[in-house]
Amino acid sequence: MTEQPSEQPSEQPSEQPSYPPPPPPGTGAGAAGPPPGDDVLWAVLAHLSYFVLSLIGPLLIFLLVGDQRPFAKRQAAEALNFHITVLIASVVSGLLILVLVGLVLLPLVLIAGAVLSIVAAVKAGNHEDYRYPLTWRPIH
Image (cartoon, rainbow, N blue to C red):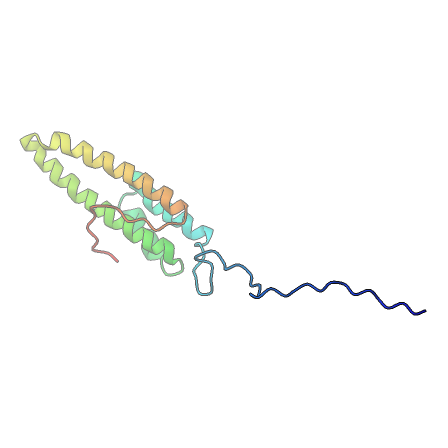
């Protein structure tokens, strides 16, 4: 007697073809990944220069490193614009000391500048473009 191979029950093909799940948003072809580590470092330094070099720090980063590092250039320009705005607000507040309004306004401007610079440095450290509020932007 010849034994016939037992037939396995065949699996019915599903009516919908199985596709791999789509990639997460922002990871498809043409999507820009996070900036390299050096870009992030220069961007953070541009924002934190508020405490040390004020206008000179972001200006140097913008001019010297900006051609090779686009993220650092954008953030250095934003930091430079903010530092210019704080400088103008500080001069105006300094003049308003003559009418006593500047005694309150000048410390507020300087404290707000310090806080916003720290917030911007943290955002830049997390690979996020940060735009300061209430900032005049003459440099792009």
